Length: 122
Image 1 (cartoon, helix red, strand yellow):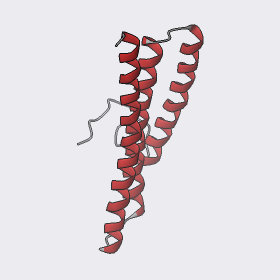
Image 2 (cartoon, rainbow, N blue to C red):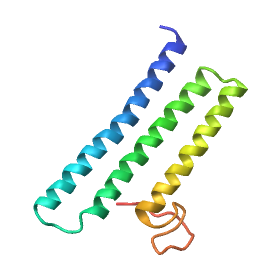
Image 3 (cartoon, rainbow, N blue to C red):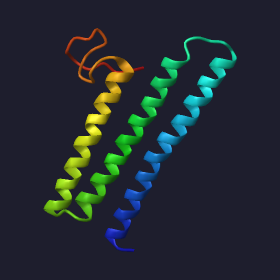
């Protein structure tokens, strides 16, 4: 097995992990929301949306990592790097948008909504 084949395989595994993170996250979030509905626990929508958004964010991060690995290690041409840059920009915009939707603040803002040092979620 050549280096190129190994890198391609690693990229596919990470791609699969990204898709799995989104799918598993969607299923788990849906099951939790369904349980909350059945138990008449409120709220249902906001926690569901937050959990679903977090799984999408994790999946996007893994998909970007796979793209970077494949592009840099296998085909580092100017064209492929430009395409990768476009993909990363779009996915970064999506990640920031999802973070804003989920938390109500930009990733670089603290919980109080003011710019500052990032806090670690527990």
